[in-house]
Amino acid sequence: MKIFALFLLLCSFLNANDMAHNFAPSEDCQACHTKIYEEFTGSMHANSTPQKDPIHGSVWKNHPQNIKLERYGCGGGQIISKI
Image (cartoon, rainbow, N blue to C red; front, side):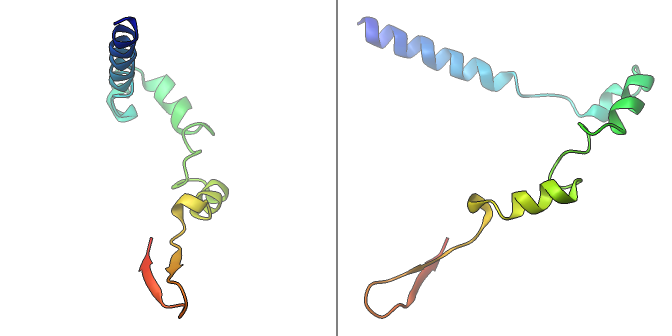
């Protein structure tokens, strides 16, 4: 019973953590926080995404999760599917 209660508690923490990741876009903050928004948009933090930074983008593109690999079948070497 204690294990089940701990499991439910863990599940509630995991679900609560998902709610913490729903942020408003930074443009929504611009109206009230003009100076902070200007400083942020020119910062390395704001421009460190794979889409904006060429070095970060090339590393991201070559990450094994982002590379489509071909899987070969036994014997004939024919391509079964692309991942």
